[in-house]
Image 1 (cartoon, rainbow, N blue to C red):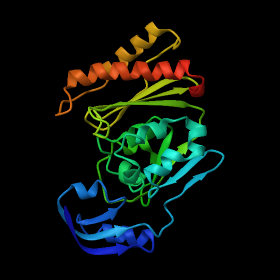
Image 2: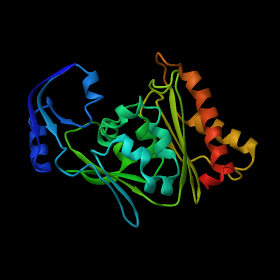
Image 3: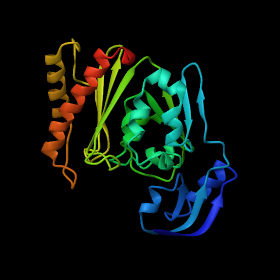
Image 4: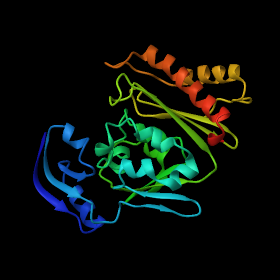
Length: 265
């Protein structure tokens, strides 16, 4: 558990940012679910709930998702489903239960760049950008490689570029952290694969070609080559070798769904 000395409901992003700069024990409160799994003394717990960051806004180019949007909002949003298929629904549906997803926030899932994050894997498979209070707008793929800092993630912007994405994951038990996550994106000019819970942060592999996705043999070759480009590690949920073999299976499953299921085209 953790202890909090001061609980501050921020009136502005400027106030929240200034407070956060005053020391490493000043923390932004998201859904407060991952945070409570740790043990620490917090000087200032900073609440952003009054700043209107809990909305999903759609425009002609894409979706602007506030950092306080819950995973449940992602799961049931019809606009996101129309634009990207069921990728976000599949990415969050194994995360504990509806009660948990009603609290867990997008910002709390993306900003820490957890290795086990289903949400990070799903967003990386789309053309996604993070909006930072001080750092401006940068591609999520760049942000995912950056070290943690004291900036504040305010929004994620996901562009509508016509891609379809299939999400796959494997867990030892239904609501456990994933052994491996996988998202394959079918774009106009080819395929990209994101592998997460390796157990490191998710990584995007985009330099493997697949010319005839309808051919089952070529899908197998693509999966073999893609898995060969990722680095895997071992932990209590599985060995590096096991994760590599699992990656091949999940990639083939995703490719099969993207090429054979009309709803994914």
